[in-house]
Image (tube, rainbow, N blue to C red; front, side, top):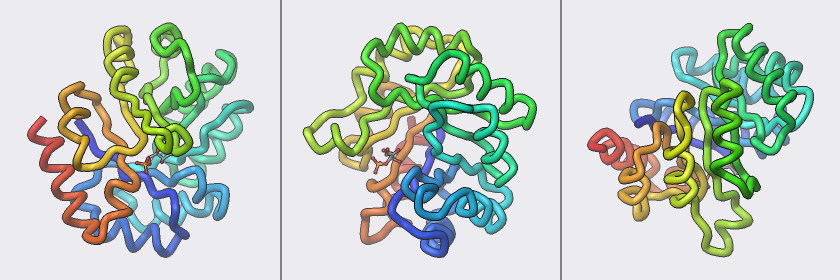
Length: 210
Ligand SMILES: O=C(CO)[C@H](O)[C@H](O)COP(=O)(O)O
């Protein structure tokens, strides 16, 4: 089980400072969608330049023209690029093809998908690297989470790695760990804490304990 730190509400210098603080505990650093909207792929480039050995994920949430967008994110230094599960199969195929060409990986975000099991099966067959269940901020605000969806995809996904994101913090981490995703994505559960290093260290410790 790996830990991905999601950076959503920072600018580039703040992102670099934050990664410096928690680097030993984090396997993947996510340049979140709001950061890419505010700063562009420059954010991916500068974080990768600052931490060349760190795996960097660009949370582009690609919905169309995936070949081109995955290529641009790869050129900026992204190791993993996100595509939405709701995208057309042609788009998913384009993303997978380009990622293979660039030696990168595709994480599919299942946000907004109703038939989680059915779509996860299809995406798995299309050769994506990760399938991620995700409760976005808008549904977190009304008390939802993705535990049940994680159990559902774990039943049907044979090849891809499974991931979970959305509102994960220390208090609910034991429940997440029980479901055994390959990747746990944490944003506010680290960045919103006064002692970010301690939060990241404790989350990593529990994840490694399994
Ligand atoms: O992709 C996202 C929002 O769309 C976030 O990066 C993801 O939800 C993780 O952040 P948090 O742990 O704060 O919910």
